[in-house]
Amino acid sequence: MILCIIFLSVASGFTDVSLRVQEIMDKANASGLRALPNQSKLLAMQKDMLNTAKMTKEQIELGKILYFDPRLSGNKQYSCNSCHNISLFGTNARVAQDNPQHLLTPTIFNVMFNDSLYYQGSINKIDRADKNTTNFTPNNIVARAVLRALTAENEMRGNINKILTDITKSEEYMSYFRRAYGTKVKVTPELIAESLASFVMTLNTFSRYDDFLAGNIKALSLEESEGLNIFIERGCVACHNGINLGGSMQPFGIMREYRFKSLGNLPLDSNNMLKVPTLRNVTITPPYFHNGAFAKLEDAIREMGQIQIGVNLSNKDINKIIAFLHSLRGNLDPIELPILPFIADD
Image 1: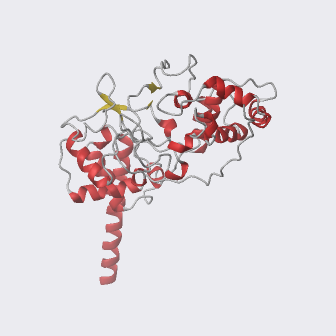
Image 2 (image 1 turned 90 degrees about the vertical axis):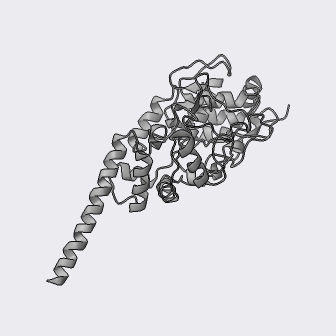
Image 3 (image 1 turned 45 degrees about the vertical axis):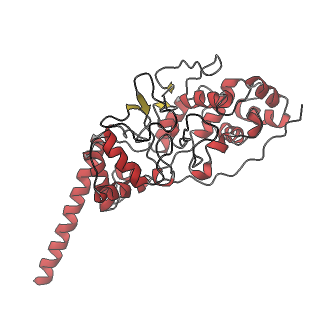
């Protein structure tokens, strides 16, 4: 009889925990948080974002080659991977050198789910105009950002005409373009940008958090789910929402001015708004804030509590939020470095 009572008590406890976790899952879905789409939906989304070949193996391989090729830059020394290092989860873990704004390189992982790109949101899904690139503008915001990065003075400083010349005179490079786009392919800035974008759009990191939002209540520990609940209840979700838990434009310093605002130039847009960084993989992509002012995640969370929601978060709450943020870490399949095509010297 005693054993039966103990068993029923334990079973009741498990049921209560499961119900509590289910409530948190429902609350998360109702608050605007979204899981990464499954493979079939993801592929449909990727294809819809491209004007050219639709995420073929050949297109993605070409994009990878371009991503790792430093010869696209003005001085032939910097590739996309130099700043958005795949082995560092799409960042370079430091504030950019020779950068008067003292800006931190944001991760390129999961970037296809952002509504806006660049800190000032100067590339977004609504407005296709981009005065900082050439006179061509792809529909895909990732491709538009890639093109700007290739040619911008404070990024790769590439000359688009020189890039086109180098690629088209290389038989090896052209063989990759023909495999991706057919024998009559004409290499254009748009095609280069979309090829790069096709590779970048594969850099998505499915996590236990996504499994949880999709219905698996066992995907998160009780502490992690409690951290998610605090994250929602305290209002963090007001800015960190959607698939990427970020990526939209939001006001910054609502309740109090950011105390390291003077470190570099705070890159707000004309409405005093800043692009919200994604929280995916945030536990392994320090430092934090646009100027990298915080090396420790707990300090960054404490600062955000004060300046955005006007709350002094307790250490207990911060630790639970961090536990939840650990569930946002995802992984990629290993990426093999490409052998770059031969380009003859001028």
